[in-house]
Length: 123
Image (cartoon, rainbow, N blue to C red; front, side, top):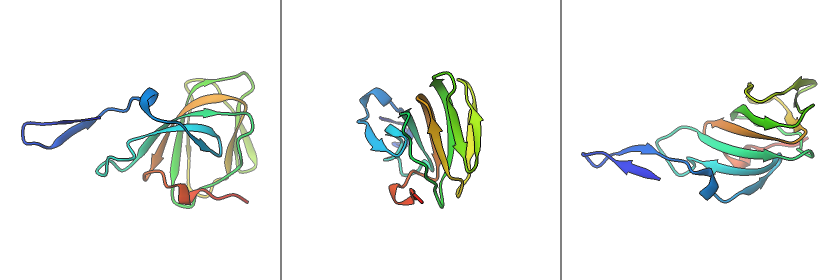
């Protein structure tokens, strides 16, 4: 959703995740916002992560996970380390880091540059 200013320029974007269709992803199910806004250099996703998330990495993308909710014992695998999670934590994952969620959780995932499904790699 956009709004134009007095000069006809787009002034802001609104993301209503409840109106975005969910798509399957290696982590579970994602609702991806700002994908169509060409002048905004990132996307933001609300991701419902399932217990069977797949280990993957990106060659170009940086992902920033903000943990909204998670079950007790939830973790994030980052290469060979496991990080215990709780709501309110934020983790920035650089390109090349193999990662996956362990346990069910809901996260906001900010992806820079914009998410590209061609940049999901699996061993």
